[in-house]
Image (cartoon, rainbow, N blue to C red; front, side, top):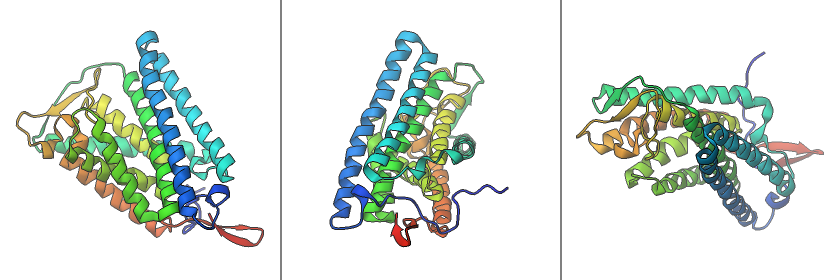
Length: 309
């Protein structure tokens, strides 16, 4: 038995083609409206996960905070599947459960390795001090990583990237969602325009690339979650400007290290090594997705009539 990332080569991505996404006049406008409605709805789900889990953790402890996040994430995935079935007339291939376990595992390994390479480069270049090991519970960082990995990938890749691809084509969609992902991080503590550009390049493009390669969210979720967890708990660095407590190691920029090289108070994500590693992986994976024909929509047969999905 061989493991396939996507099925037959050149199959393309399942973007949806029925009901609100059916071919015809103003399809782009119908698609954009549906994307906006889903985006706003699931941003509320994301907010409920973040705010609610903080409240539950404060009053009942970290284990119940993690349980709350897992429940909200599962409910969010189920809600997305139900809405997709109702409004688009399809079950979402991007949530294919048969591929979930292996692709999540691969994503977790890739994300952890990438971030470790970044921190190793920062230390080797004399830009970071690393101390430890210490010990603290990983539950808090697991909670943050699960929430950001699942819900941010659902919003940015399954909703925005997929539907922008349907409305505008692959390249505009890829660039727009990456830019928006960077801009959204400007609300984080210690954010700078350079940090937003770094997030757009290394994360917005790279995480989208794994979705475009597989046609599913699982690998992107794994990479995203493991990147955050490794950055925050394993290496104890700031995660998108947020300080993390209770880490295995503690990592911070050396005094006087240039911010554009070290990432400054925003953390390793805004560093030059992160941009090189993340963007390099994005280019390789996007090239792979291109070779597989996944920069276009899938063509399927319905009762002898070919339809672009």
